[in-house]
Length: 269
Image 1 (cartoon, rainbow, N blue to C red):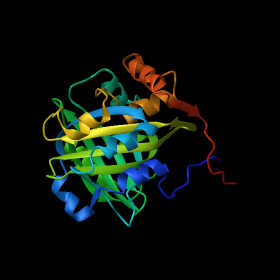
Image 2: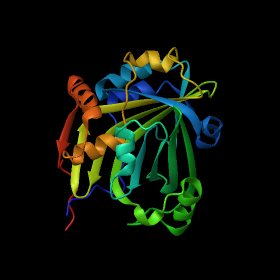
Image 3: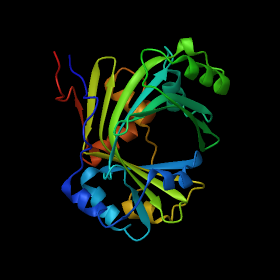
Image 4: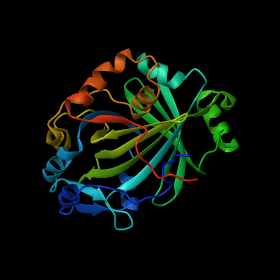
């Protein structure tokens, strides 16, 4: 059986580690000042080799999360959807008000949160609560949480995709903006495994859109639509409807990102 290891140290190139070294650090407690659970989001995709140059431009305005002496954290996000992949298709069809249901585990510290992430009128609103790693169905307290918040019946929800990645988190010096940079992105869904080799996803979380943000300017690329959830499912299941995502797939090829099916992973008996 091929599996992604449950724990591993986050992996970043030496050049990126060197670029992060001059940044001042911020801890988890202090970072709570910039939670931004009600926010606007924009994303930029670029090749991992270009991240170090962008970060070097931000040393005097941004701080990097440091936890347990590391600047990078390993995340695992496990999504639940209904049998028709309602969340996927609502995103594909650009429904204005939509939601995603997921478990997010911070693998370094083994903390798990159950999250409902909603897109409402162009803003992102996230509700979450502490929980345990999921199984094949929602935990009872999480099932109640999702019903109270959305009216969705938990019996209709089952695991749809697991996404592993390493995250660098930057926060602006006045705590008005968060920037996340996701690397080493891997998808697994229903026995299918895909690695996005070379991909870096930069996401800007702001109280309102600010295209003059130093972080936005530093990456020197235009924001574009990108959903790890949708791209992961579309990559693992090529027969899914994906017309609105073709531009994103072309963008990945343009920046030399390769989607590798069934990448080599740790093998257990």
